Figure 1 (cartoon, one colour):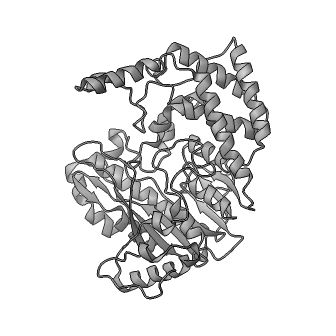
Figure 2 (cartoon, rainbow, N blue to C red):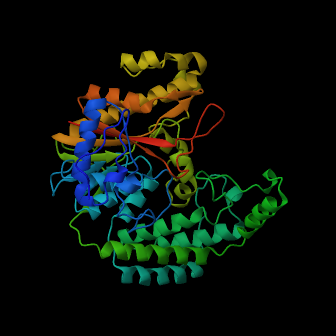
Figure 3 (cartoon, helix red, strand yellow):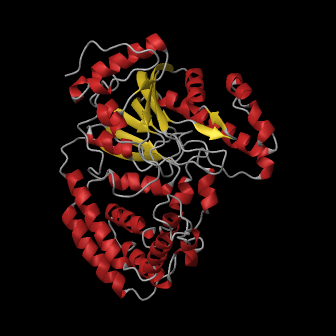
Amino acid sequence: MFETTIPKTQDCAQVTDFIELKDNIDNVITHFMNEYKNHQQSIEVDFRKLVSWVPYGDSYTHFIHSYPAKLLKHIPIFFLNSKKIMPNPEGTVLDPFCGSGTVLLESVIAGYKSIGCDANPLARLIANVKTTPLNADILKETLITILIQAKRVKKYRTRNVTNIDHWFSEQVKNDLSKIHTAIQKIENIEVRNFYEICFSNIVKKVSFADPNLSVPVKINPLKYSDPLLYKKAFTELESKKNISVFDKFKKQSLENIKRIEKLNNLKTSGNAQIVGRDARSITKCLDNDKSQWLSDSIDLIITSPPYAGAQKYIRASSLSLGWLNYCENNSLRDYEKQNIGREHYYKNEYQVKNNTGLKEIDNELEWIWEINPLRAHININYLVELRSSVKEMYRVLKDGSHCIIVIGNNMVCGKVFDTKKYLKIIAEDAGFETIFILRDKIHSRGLMTKRNKTANVINTESIMVFKK
């Protein structure tokens, strides 16, 4: 049981030993509020222990497709089970940086309506499929049809994948083309989307890309001086030349059908919808209607924005984006330009000094301009765009409702880039009140940001709770 008397701490509160049951979450929230009010310091937690009834591994459709730097599902589960944070049982949850849909899925499981936005079309597709119940028998029948039709395909075109011959053998390239040609003939859009995701999730697995890295980097045996490691890498590289694409696709599809069956068995009134591409301007729908989402209509926001220069989401998705026809009319650079936290700018874009418009931040970051104008532009423009997103969150959120943002500090030019501090300034300038801030260690290597000697690995994230 949760103990009502919790020992006081000097600079943080470690309460993971005081909660074991989900019924105690509101008591823990109250403790966090009081502790932060008294000490004004972030509170150390372990969400895996706070939400100890939830397993860390796969559940429902969470693992339906790989995606870099996924949000730990325990974080939204914790807040979605708090009546203090989400008092409306029929409320709407927003994730303006929804990625592959972790918050959306957990909101559906909890019985809420959820909406999401993301600049990456692959992320939007994954989130859509992840939260859409489908008939498993129809999926199984369709899989048989795909495999039969794909083997009969005579005419097909190779997709617009950058450096395709660098990444795929001729046999693999042909088999992928045949399977995707068969998938595109599926009339039911939801079933087709499901198999697009199954297909996308094997693309990197059958390529020459190193499976241990989030972005595509070709396996290179020559980088290993150890004979055993060299042999292992060489064998893996050779195996990719004649790998059975059809077997990989069938196996992935059957695994995902099992995941969808779990979603179908879920008794919930929750549902999810992808409504926009841009967190800076949340629209009512994804297609032609660009009118803004209603102000004061969202009951809870839970989101994890991209970190400045931390994750190359488009590059990590590049092989899938090409094979799924997203690069027919748009280049990878076009998609990257839509991402907050991007790194690539032309020289004429960063020759003129920019600023956030908030003196406290601009004065503190003046030093970056003296060392590296490009890095200064990347990080300041990141904060400018993050500020626009926070203002939009404030606009759509109901009065008295909460906004939870998960973020981490980075390193710039060898010094700490205090994203948490800057976000707090930005949020309070927009009108939010800071209720409390938690910090949790990242147990995986999903947030590696090491570019060079001046960068680092993000190993702690802050969970910032604001109120409108």
